[in-house]
Image (spheres, one colour):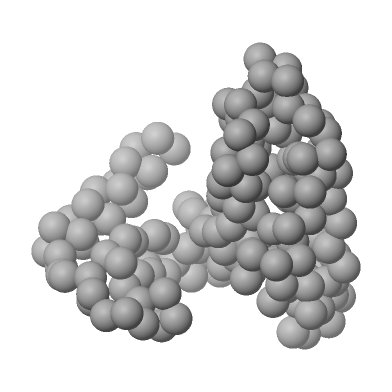
Length: 177
């Protein structure tokens, strides 16, 4: 299995070296995004290259013709939501930034997401639950709650978009470091 993953990363590194390009420096770079998705020709694997010159692989479930070599597209959407990298990433980014601006001694932030999808096509997310684990010294629970709420309601574009079809809930725990 490790060999297979190394092979995929080799493809990504080769892709980035072969197709390195300048990221557009326009003032619209935050409003306009680009991405090219190409079928690899194998199973249900796809290679995506973003306008900021990053690449990632997506694959399907074995029952849908995939080989389970990479995350599924909807898993990436969910992951991105967590970090704004779509939603998970986006909201974690917001929470850390808001807490830092509030002079909280945040040391870590991890978000676990659990989502449910509609039973029929187009199987959109119908509910998404975020569980935040925020660590730091003497973090104030009310400020952590406020940071999460601000992200959900005001700053996280992925969360706001997904909130149009999904009930979004959250909870959090604070870990003293």
